[in-house]
Length: 201
Image (cartoon, rainbow, N blue to C red; front, side, top):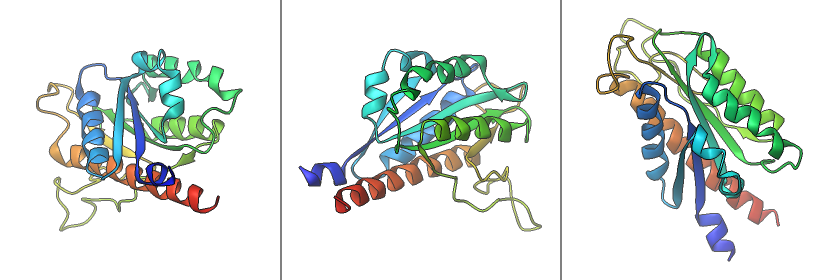
């Protein structure tokens, strides 16, 4: 029984995507999670998640994702955030792992504000936030647009999608690989945390 608890984790990915770009980022996060042996995913839009509270509560980690609109998370994702208040009072997500990702048309686009929103949401629920864990890319003369974390975020994974391109062309591969890295990192941390919890009795 302990072996199952320490060798398997479920990572929930809850996201909203207005035009499909953030959905591609979410799928990349999912690919990263599934690269880790013993990690499985629960892949939900923010609307679907609001009818799956029990499944989210059974997850070991939740990764939040939304586009950044007008300097904050999209209204649709904010509706999900507000709806989690019914779990807040029960401490249902206390000590779970959390992380986040976001996308916008501009390189900055105030994406940090959205990641901070996610981190505060996690803190309110007593969750443990996992940062991106990558140095900034493309910030020196030998850097390139192909670098992981080319946009230079630390709190979570950022992506940039050109406003005149559809999701089949944007975000670029480097941003998708950055999102994949985040998913893999969260799955690894969730496994470490699960093993530590069992070892501590």
